[in-house]
Amino acid sequence: MLRAGVAQRVITPAGSWPMDGYILRDGPSCGVLDDLLAQVLFLDDGQTRAVLVTLDLVGVDAAFTARLRAAVEERYRVPGHHVLVTA
Image (tube, rainbow, N blue to C red):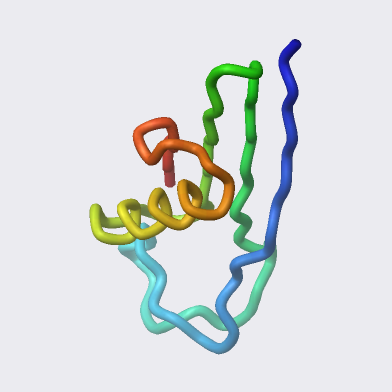
């Protein structure tokens, strides 16, 4: 039997921030049109657990990914190498 779960959380930062990916834009953000989200898919077939994390970001670095994998492994008993992080 395959068990699955999903979750999402708003990760939109408060305040005004520089915006990557907008080469013609001058200055920081001036409001929020759509929130940024972190979304998670958890899968467990009784033998193997896996987690897919998607982030509405341009990218994340290896240190962030390592910390996230370690936290998922500790809290949910999912091996870090079974955690896919994408941005």
